[in-house]
Each structure stands twice: as C-alpha cells, then as structure tokens.
Amino acid sequence: MFGAQLYDTIGTGYTATRRTDPRIAARIWDALGDAGTVLNVGAGTGSYEPPDRYVLAVEPSALMRSQRPPGAAPCMAGSAERLPFDDLSFDAAMAVASVHHWPDAIAGLREMRRVARRVVVFTHDTSDAGWRDRFWLSRDYLPEVTDLVAGRPAVTELAGAIGARLEPVPIPWDCADGFFEAFWRRPEAYLEEDVRRGTSVWSRLGPEAERRVVRDLRDDLASGRWARRNRDLADLDEAELGLRLLIA
Image (cartoon, rainbow, N blue to C red; front, side, top):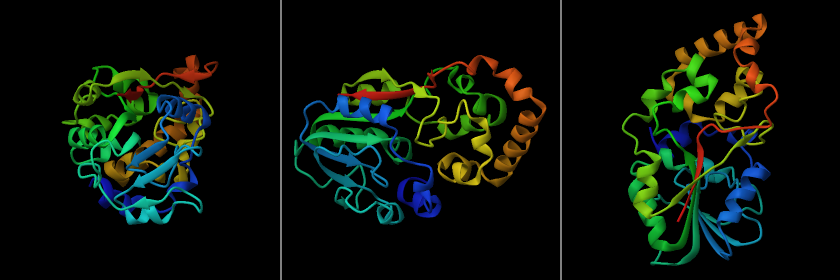
C-alpha cells in the first residue's frame, strides 16, 4: 500500500506521537528562504508547516486530512504526481517524510519543481551499502527493512531529478517527532504501542515481525545487552542516521 490507501488504514491516532520537532523545523524553514507562499505536498496532519507564511496543503488521505488541527493551513485532496496548479504558482514547495510513500517519487518531485521556484524535501538516504547498519533497530532487530526500500530511487537520484543539493539532518536525542529513527537513544519507546503505530514501517512488515522485535528488544533491555551493545550512544546529543534535506 502507498499514500492515501496506506494512511487511510494506519493513520488513526497518528498525532499522538508525530509532531513538529523545533530543531528539524528550523532547518526546513531556513531552507525555504524568503518564500512567502508555500505548498506542502503530502502534508499529513500539518507538522512542519511554517506559521509565518501562507501555506496551502495537499494530502491524498481523507483520514489524515481529518486530523489536521484547528487553525492549520487549508488542505485539499490531491497527489504529488498531479498537482492542480499553474507553473511557478508558489514561492516554494515542501514535502516532509512523505516521498517514500509516493507511487512515483520522481514524477512528484518534478511536479513540485514545476509549480514552485524552490523545493525543499525532508527524506531518508538509503542509497549506500551501510545505511541499514547505522541504526541499531534495523541492524539488530529489523533486517526486513531492506525489503521495504528495494527498488526505491536512491536519494541521489531524487536530488538529480530536480537539481537539488543534499544536506544531512542529525536527529536530536530527545526528538519530539516520533518517526522511525527518532528514539535512537530511548529504546524503551519502541515497546510502546502508540510509538509503533505512528510509523508505517510496522504495518508494512506485519504483526509477526513486530511481535518478534518487541519481544527481543524487551529481553535485551532487561538483560543489559542493548546497553552494552550500544554504549557509544549514551553521551551523544544527536545522531546522523541518514536523514537528508533536498534543496533545489
């Protein structure tokens, strides 16, 4: 499942753990430059929409649109691959943690490039051979994530499609946004149902893999094995786990 179909299925309660982290937001908003009008593509519930500019959101999932808070930017149904706007209608177009759900990411990025003078995309680099080993959850507990990215365009290919540069975005240890890698220094969080329901990985891999990870992680935390294996994380304030900004 992709896009609207996926989030109409799993999106209930999404806002319980997914919210704007101010440090990541600062990076995204700075990349928007002096844009006064912003199109947010694959906007979800409205996280990371800049409050000081005019924003119009596009989101294919009716369930996600229904969870946008009062006062959020106006939001219309639509998909990245077919944006119903004239060329250069916006100063900037942004997409946050949604490109990997688009049926055709390259087409969607080119549409953003068509309708806006600047494009800012927050996504994940899975294009190098060691990406899976950067994060202990995928390395030690969820090797199946490799299958989820098989056939997906590399981040360098995404950047090349719109002439974007790539910037790394480190994840703070106390990240407020509960995306998949956010709790890299807080492993107990992955035992919580709400945390797992806030990311699509678990639904796409299925209940058997999820139950196995919860069981194995709980055992490793209780025995101290997780702490011994990941002792190098204890004093880090932030981690580089492959999150990237594409800026064009």
